[in-house]
Amino acid sequence: MFNSQQPIPDEYILMSEKDRDERIRAIKSNLGSRLVILGHHYQRDEVIRYADYRGDSLKLAQLAAQEKEAEYIVFCGVHFMAETADMLTSSEQKVILPDLEAGCPMADMAEIDDVEECWNLLTAQYSQEIIPVTYVNSSAEVKAFCGRNGGMTCTSSNAPKIFGKLLGEKKSILFLPDEHLGRNTGLKWGLHDQDILLWTRENPEEVELPEKAPKLILWNGYCTVHQKFKTHHVDEVRRKYPGVTVIVHPECSHAVVERADLSGSTDYIIRQISAAPAGSVWAVGTEINLVHRLAQENPDKTVVSLNENVCLCIMMSRISQPHLLAALENLNQGKVVNQICVDRKITADAISALNRMLELSK
Ligand code: SF4
Image 1: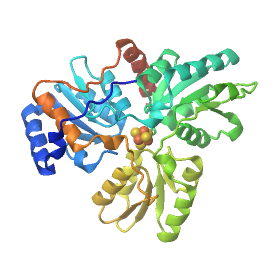
Image 2: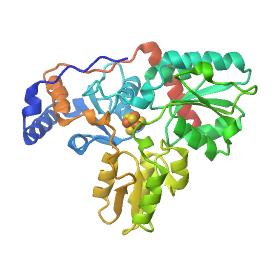
Image 3: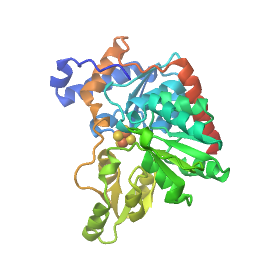
Image 4: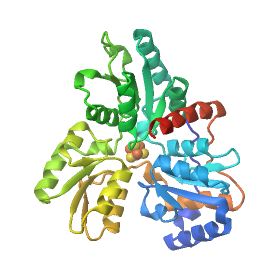
């Protein structure tokens, strides 16, 4: 796993928000093009307002790779995102995560030893080619595992294209770590429940392997945020807002995706709502910071959360204004803290998985 976060000095917590704001802006201006701050869509407003770029994890990492002048890349997101940014940037560039405890629970559900065990059992049982595909929301080690074994990464945007190509070539897919994105994508391509095997990582010895290789093997990881949306929320919101369009992220369960009107990545959700006519009403099944921002940025439309009880990514929220300031103060003094460094061999294998994704999703 990764290093633990050292407590940040009290002064940053006790300082007023205005003072922290002034200090962050002063450091940004002092470091100029030596510093790039990246903010994931799910970050709180108190942090994302300092981001030079906003986006999903892969887009941000690719933007970081284009920022050749930047010595410091401060990633306001979670651990696996900072890892991807480190792997895509040069060895001179330093990627910093303002709170080292900000990890993604879903990514942590696929530990490399468990994945290797699953792979050994599957490849011992089946002669058919199995391609490991991991959602980018996974550790660098799992991405590297896919790269080493002829597999690739995918995002929620390009998963349908990648599944389509592999299934069209009659290959079986081992999909990590999100059961729901995998199931939603497989069913979209016409797979049936009997084509899909669920791999229970907690007790692999209890998984009954059928005689023929399943078309899709799903790791049983999940996003703790998107699992909070249930079918009864869709029914309730339709009663409350007649004519509402329900749009959800494919990390939601298949039952929710099926009952919604639309589903797609965060970028897809943003594009749909931005392009919608004034007066339209939207219920959105994704992280609450993004839903609030969509409501603010589309004042001519009604945008509400599909679940009225706040669906917050607690791990993303660990990146607070005081944590960001503490990281920047150190950089301003030439001290690099909370750097995320991925081993070179892991990087090489993971990059081949990322490159295969880019090639297949063209
Ligand atoms: S929203 Fe879900 S997938 Fe994204 S970082 Fe949080 S727990 Fe992980």
